[in-house]
Image 1 (cartoon, one colour):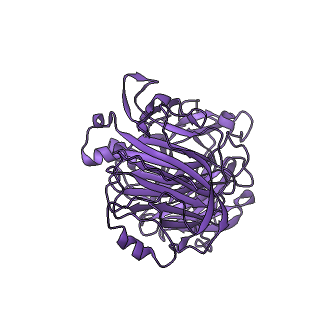
Image 2: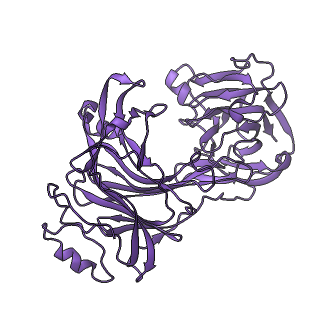
Image 3: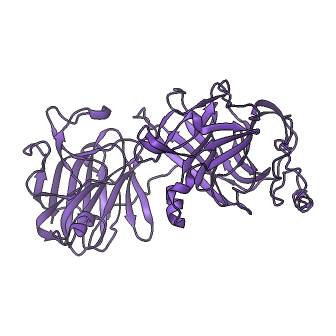
Length: 511
């Protein structure tokens, strides 16, 4: 067992915290530990026998570079911070992951935080715990990770033992990746739970732990199990990590200046890891949860077949100049434009020497009809959406004022719109105010695909046709609003990642 020495200069834990001892004695132990002089036991759960496989008490004068590796780079995109080794300060038996205001900016970032992970140590299954004190307005994170790159072998996952937010929130989350059979890239699935402690977590130290085995992931707070999840796909060694992030939206929520973060730290007393050597008895645990992978909700055909089809317009984007839009198409927001259909970012090419509509994140384009359609409408298109991110959004538009800049750029979700169909992480999904998002069909992300939607404007329903040549009615859904008449279509990139592409749009009126 790991030694349980305490630094005498440190404050004792909250009297509300207690260690899980044995079945049926939790309430008695809780009553006894109302005495604040009793220290928290640091041993792993008593329902099993354990051996220590890793520990760091942070008793040296600096972070051990034999045990830990530190991030030494900025965080990308819109993120606020860089993360540097110097932000990990070991003093008086504690690791302080210190937040700093960088003057002058370092790596283009005015702020820095910290992120370390075990250099050589990884473990599959066991009990992992750390005694730490939150830093106010930080995301205080203690987690296990098996990322791409460092571990090319599947699976890949992340177990957030604690992502803590002051004053009292403990976020316990599992992220894991599913690989569609047609892709080498993964789709991320997550299941999280937020739990409120009985005391402010930046005022004292608490022990955050997770027991991970082949069947379950069990989160602990001060020795007490607080969440149990059936293990979905986490069956490989992972490393151990500690990190911090400035929670800007929490600062804004409370009206607090960002400058107060200079010097704020997450403080870590120790990190310890154990491997189970024997089970002793069945533990008394909260009910277990199961995270089911999302599935498509199928609907029977809702719209009668067409007797006659009148094409309102077709667009293959070949006549437009690269960087512009074809006649009739208008910018709703940002700068959508026609582009060459190349293999940018590994995207397959739909056809040789082809042109496509390219939508960067947030871009929105629309085209209005010459006359409103009140009956049935058919929309066909080819599209490419990268894997692992929200992508294309398709709507039919109603009344809005094009000369009003705000109405123009928000007409895809306000006012008299019809279906609100979004490509989301391996699915086609529609939105209603009552049910929110409903997956209605699977979509092969990372490949070009063809979709056909048949809409009944008067009834507010649509059918989706997929398969070879979009001949098979697969499912369908409902409109977001009761639309009086469709007056145009809108396409938007409703994500934050790589571009989406659209080609060969055909819109027809059905009789």
